[in-house]
Image (cartoon, rainbow, N blue to C red):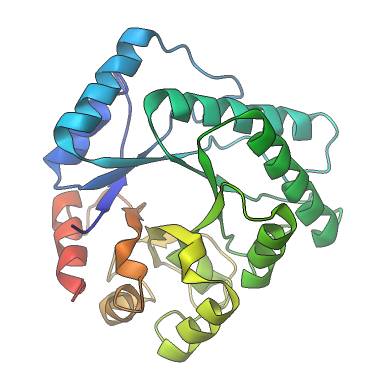
Length: 273
């Protein structure tokens, strides 16, 4: 079955995410496991954890988690970098308690220190987190190419993977970010080249987002599927390339007014041949 859904809210109680996801036809979902705008893990008792696990089993909806906004594992700042690694470890441990196997994190910004330094800190951060937290796999997400970003090139992802080694590390590819970084994913030749560099087997999830801005804009501006520069034909080609449709596919598109959430999921489902 196609593992397809959206990022959904955990407001009220974390198990309610399953109700929201089921209500719009999701077979998979992405959530934050804590306050996305804070550094510290929000409180969560055993009752909430048990409720989440029960609904995961009863609904069959697969879940991945996403890191909060503030941590930056490529940071050259001596204060925020260790806080970012601590946050990564804490989120991994929370995922393990909830039974969530994959945690997506951005590689972040080197803050002007240079890409090589940023990539080195990403490697160190990932190794520290994997040493400290068990079970959960880290999925590094590619970037759109904004100033000082780390991870906008496929080669960056491969470099980190090769230096970390064959551990609990994989990738989440964001289609808007790829397009903004200059990869025209509407073309088979580009997809062949990308996955010739980065094995599709190392990709465990996809953020499926159209792009408001043109190819190579380096701007992370999501659009609804078919309402941006990638377009429905481009997504159909992307989704039916190789093993992509076997991955966990998560929409992070705007909530209307162009299209309803359930309708958008239905359109994507119909694209997969």
